[in-house]
Length: 102
Image (tube, rainbow, N blue to C red; front, side, top):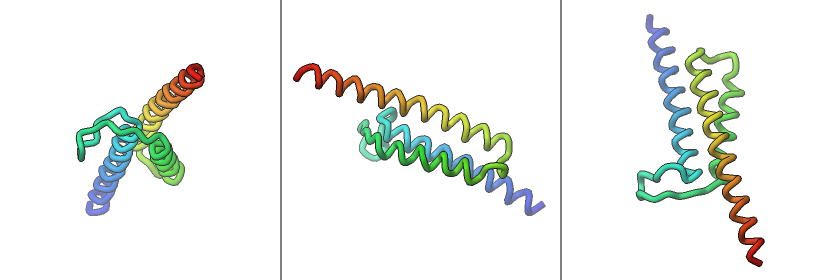
């Protein structure tokens, strides 16, 4: 019984970790407000690093996750990838506009 309690606690902690990292990445992508200063801040390189860490976490925990944990990490990664690509497209368009003005 004690082991099951530990398993449930670890499952909850894993999910909390993934969601926390997702929230951090969304802030880094400029999609959500930084709660510490109330500002929108964008750091694409840092967002990419956070995304890479979540991918690493998925790889390192492969075949060791519950279905719920797999679903959460997969949905989180899909959502972050779409938002990351959207922000990269915006940056590319901004760079193209600056280039045209020259």
